[in-house]
Length: 321
Image (cartoon, rainbow, N blue to C red; front, side, top):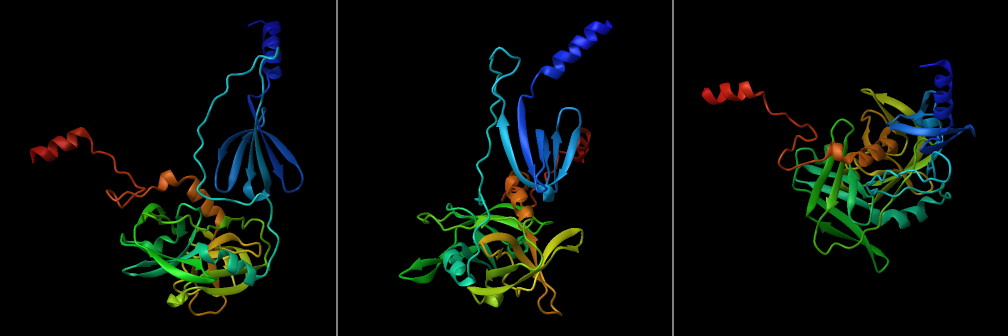
C-alpha cells in the first residue's frame, strides 16, 4: 500500500464517529466518553477510541448510555442493533433519598420485610418487587425445598401476618450467601417492596438500622452506625455495623436513613457485642443482574454447576461393562 493511500485510509477511519457513545460521570467531576466493553462487579472496561480504560466502580457517579443518530455523513442513519434487555427485578432510587426518622421508615417499610421459615430453622428476607420476588441468605434455605414466607400486611392500621407456602427458589449463590425466592401462591396480592441503594455512597460513622426476626422475635428493629465498609472474611468484603445482628436476622435488610437497602445482614461475632456484618448491596445487584448464571433447578439442585456429558469412548466402556 502506498504512503498516500495509508494516510487517506487513516483519515477515513479517524473521521468516522463511534456508533455508540456511553458517558461515565466520575465522582471527581470528570467525564469519560466511549463504548462500554464489559461491566464487572468491581470495575467497568471502556473503549475510548485509542485505548481501553478500566474504571473502578467506587469512582463512578453515574452512567449514561446514548446511541449516535448517524454515521458516515450525509445524514444517512446507521443500522441500529436492537438488544433486548432483561427487565430489572428491582428498583433503585434516581437520587439520594431524604433522611428520615427510624420510626417513620419502619412504618413505611414494614410490609416489605418478611420472615423465611424452613423445617430446619428461620431467617429474614425482603421483597424487591411487587410480584413477590425476595432476597435472603443462601444459608437460610440451604438444603431445603419446603419454604414458607410470612409477610406482614397492613390491615386496619396493624401489621397482620400472612403465610405463603408456595415459594420457589429462583437463583442461588452459595459462595456469596445469596438466594432469590419467588412467592408463587395463587391469589397473592401486589406486594410492597424496598429500593436497593448503594453502600459505596455510605460513609463510615453513618447511621444504619436493621429489621428482622432475631431468635424468632419478628419485627425487631435495631439501630447502629456503619463501623467499616471493608471488613474482609475469606476473601470477601463486608459492611461492619454496631446494629445488633442475631440468629434469625440472617437475610434481612440493612437500611440507610433514606430507607434504601444497603446490605443483607448475614452474621455476627458471637463472643463480642456490636459486631454485626452485612453483604454490600452491590453484590446483591450483581447477583440479580446476572441471575441466569445462578439459576436454580429442582432437577439439578447443585446448580449453577452444569456437568458435561462424558467422552463418547467413556460411555461405550461403561455400557460394555
